[in-house]
Length: 223
Image (cartoon, rainbow, N blue to C red; front, side, top):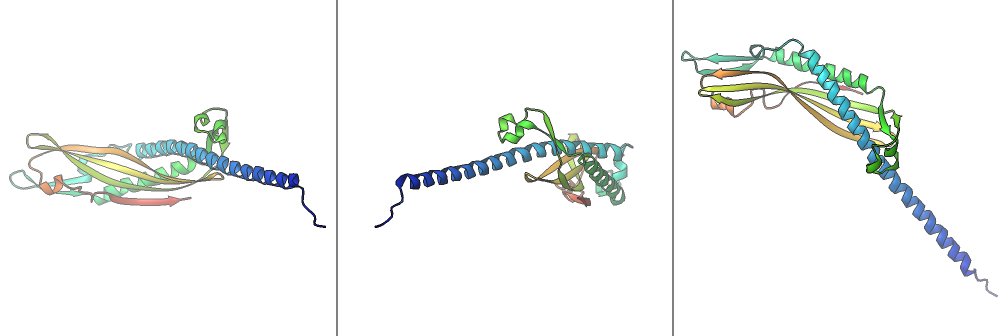
């Protein structure tokens, strides 16, 4: 006599398997949503911290006003026409090195306390991410700060050209959290000085950057 398994027992096992599979899928979806929202909130917090850290570093480094003549030397011919525009590498590297170092120090200090994430972010729903009490979350930031100089020429009148010099601070940040890792870059551009040049400026300078179109300076890394 053959033994036949009751149909209701088989049906029960199928239902249990479907419930278990649905539960696993739900957990995975919730985990992905929560991870996405948490990393987004943490990134927004770190961007704010990075902006403050870099601005404080620039304020400290450039507390003494930098004059145009300290960074650039303009050579002229006997008729007063501009023949060459050269940069001062010593002064440029000093400003870039100090700014990069101070930015890195500020970032490290300001990120030691981690970030505060609203409770709503833990539900994985973006609409709720800003609600609820703040929960302190420890993060491990890994940053790389680079400074580079750039310049721009702009017509300022008859036979006059305004030359502006900028300092660009690029901070590459990696945030390591239990919920995941997020990488982003923050760019801060600061006007260092500018001057109106009287006389004909060679076309080669008007169409290029005397600092090499992104003169990379003083990179520094720190976990």
